[in-house]
Amino acid sequence: MIKAVRGTRDLLPPETALWNFVEAAVRDVFRAYNFQEIRTPIFEETALFARGVGEETDIVAKEMYTWEDRARAASEKGQSLTLRPENTAGVVRAYIEHKLWDRGLNKLYYIGPQFRRERPQKGRYRQFYQIGAEVIGPASAGSESPARDAEVLEMLATLLDRLGITDWNLELNSVGTPADRAQFNDALRKALEPVSAQMCDDCQRRAVTNPLRVFDCKVPEDQPIIETLPRITQFLGEDSRKYFQAVQDILTKVGVRFSLNDRLVRGLDYYTRTAFEFTHGALGAQNAILGGGRYDGLSEALGGPAAPGIGFAIGEDRLVMSLKETAEGVIRKPDVYVAPMAGMNGEAARLARELRRHDLVIELGDDGFRLKKSFEAATKAGAKYILIVGESEVKADAFALKNLATGEQISVPRAELAGKIQG
Ligand code: AMP
Image 1 (tube, rainbow, N blue to C red):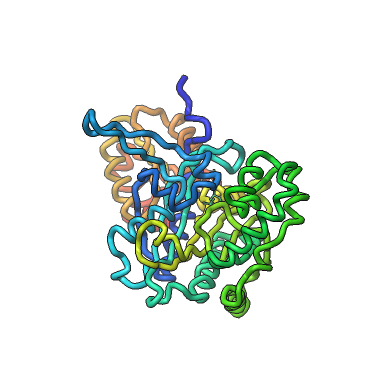
Image 2: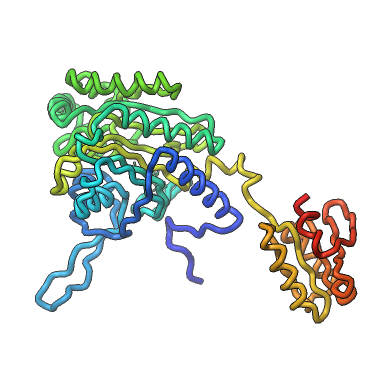
């Protein structure tokens, strides 16, 4: 038997109703903040992620699905392509390619699959789904303002509340400007020199190439050493500190709660200044529902003009997981099971068509079923009513409607059916 590939999975009904519920809420909430949807390709040139996400990140160093595409001519080399591991680099590429700065401030969101070769476990997949948004544009359009950071964070708080996810925790940090980071990296390198030999292989490499990434380490034995390292907060310049304080002041003003976490540096190299994560207690080890931050230098790193920006990505798989307990009402079962008697498929289809126009969910049976089998099918489908379509009913233009929960059965004229069922 051929099965879904390790780390991928089928999303089946009724759970897909939860996915649709989440996506509908997302579109609704984001619209209120004037975000519009963007859809970028699922694969891109490998160089985009190497440059955009960072060579030393776990994502680029270990987790990408990369292949060499067939060459166009025998003399040429095939292009190196990669399934997108995240969507920010793709959005910024599109920003540059289509000169979206002409539109001023861009507020874009996306919903779609991402691919990372991580070790699969509960809440961690190799094909997973992200809902993300980016605010990007020239600084003259207001893209480099603490007001933008705070608006994005407030929007996320609103979305989670709207979905009924209440026990979230917003963790906030500033990773400073590239200049702050350079000083911090020097200090880290020095602090790591005498201790890195006792750390995991990844950290030994990071200590030399990109010391900041040591904070991504999850190896328990390394944590006591990491605890003793200097923190970015000690290296923030005056501007970065002021900016960070301004973001916090707005959040306090609008009533969005947060906690500061000076270890939070996020697993991607492009972040500057504000970095954040929302966690949720009920999720267990993989408790981050979403992460994001500011990436003022990304456009330039990808060969574009200066375009400060801030964005986030929500793990949709995890969002749906944290929702499951509260989302009973989301899954819509049939209102009516229409059961045709022998030879009545046409009449039943006509009636079903009429009822569906009234926004009712109708499951249509088959005139090959005996009545007992129709009742079983209606119960299995979770229908509220069964509606029997026989020759005498059609002649009388009134139909037997039975409430499957109470057992009550009444005869209802065709014109009154929809109203009766809705009531
Ligand atoms: P990142 O792009 O790494 O900042 O991740 C943003 C969010 O995507 C995380 O907070 C997770 O909720 C989700 N996420 C990242 N990787 C995975 C994965 N392999 N499986 C499921 N969700 C993921």
